[in-house]
Image 1 (spheres, rainbow, N blue to C red):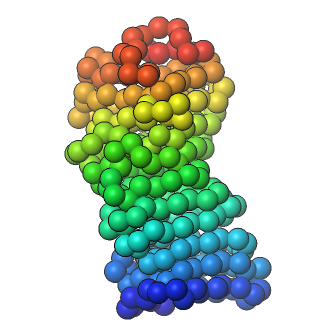
Image 2 (image 1 turned 30 degrees about the vertical axis):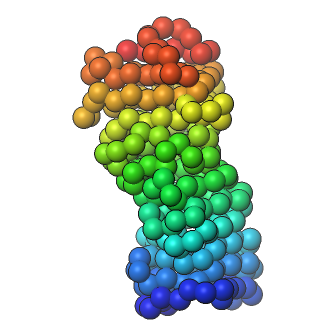
Length: 262
């Protein structure tokens, strides 16, 4: 259990076949580097704040109700396989050198980006498995410098909310929506379209795969490219919402291999 703050180069290695529990002490009680390479079950409890790097290699994880918080003040490296689900994950604003994600991180709770322009997140993929509000942008965004990908695979209704109240740029990475999942863009403008990586792809499923909310609208959502694969993107532009692809405003109609609907 962590109640104070531990930094430096120490690495906590969780190994062996015995079941083990890691209890966090809150957002300010930081662990140093944490490596999970277990043949047993590791349980995360409370808020586990990491002041250094995180590596998951092997082991069953039980994470319900927990939060993994990355808040180092210098560069932080995160390595994951995506084989086990994390619950809530937060990227804090205090990192002045940014985060590097290697591999895939699976999140079944809420993924919160509080990072700022000085604390960008580079590389990797987040698999979003939660329903409801599953991704939130609460920081002043990253000026379009983030490069991670987002894959939505809840099989239900999932919301991406930008509540930063400031910059609209989020990630230059790709968004993929699996069949049966409907993502809703809410809370503020969101710009994914700064480079060729900022594309929205809906996996074939003959459903509505993306919607711009009417709540608090109008909002503008921009992608570099879009492929609907028989799905529908719902504008709700009676609320004056705007969809842009490569900065060009898109009106309703059959296009992008699917349908853009009012």
